[in-house]
Amino acid sequence: MAPVETYVKTPGGILDYTLDWGSWLKANELILTSTWAITSDQPPDDYERDMIVLGGLVTGALTTVWVKAGVLATIYTVTNTITTPSRVDSRSIQITIGVR
Image (cartoon, rainbow, N blue to C red; front, side):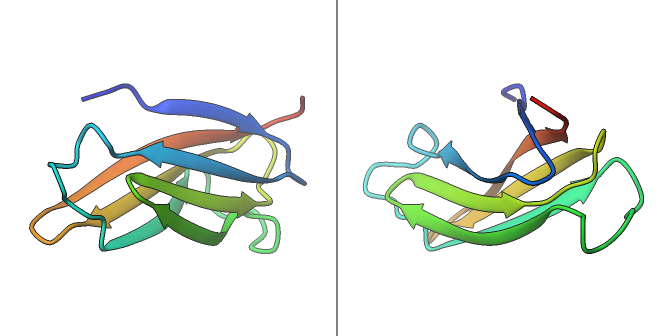
């Protein structure tokens, strides 16, 4: 299992993150669906400030998510689950809310 990629973003940042599934997909295999979920290491502080998914996109073997908000010093795990005609898998990244 590959190490989880980690990022830092500010509470006000609206940023995109992309996962490359190319090495995992078989020849001519397509991503049919891509869903994103967010969990954190802390109980929700304020639902209006907690990190949320704004949208996602599939471009060939790449899946992209846009997220906004987040509570300072909180670590969020953002998980992407994809389905192909014959398989399902998930990958995660971690985003820490901090200052740059």
